[in-house]
Image 1 (cartoon, rainbow, N blue to C red):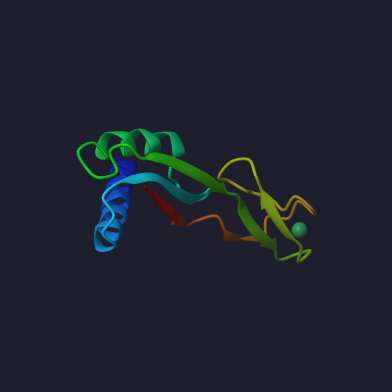
Image 2: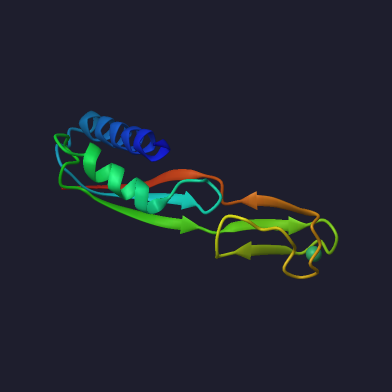
Length: 115
Ligand SMILES: [Zn+2]
């Protein structure tokens, strides 16, 4: 239930930001989720819809942008991006296993749209 606590944090933060600004209705929250963050977008959307009830985000839509995993290979020194899935085992250029994953771990709140 990792996603439940994430959804709760996202909504708490968005609600706090909006109340601080005198806003009382949140229409949309845009999140950016790294493909290697371990967060399942579908589960997060579901948790969001449950937790938003009764808050000023009760009518808000959740938009999720998935950020691909990126990395760099130690052998051929090329950088790469993986759009499919969480796990990169080998460099797509030279098939080396000596890779370092450099991006795709983060979860960020990109934007809050208010009325
Ligand atoms: Zn390589």
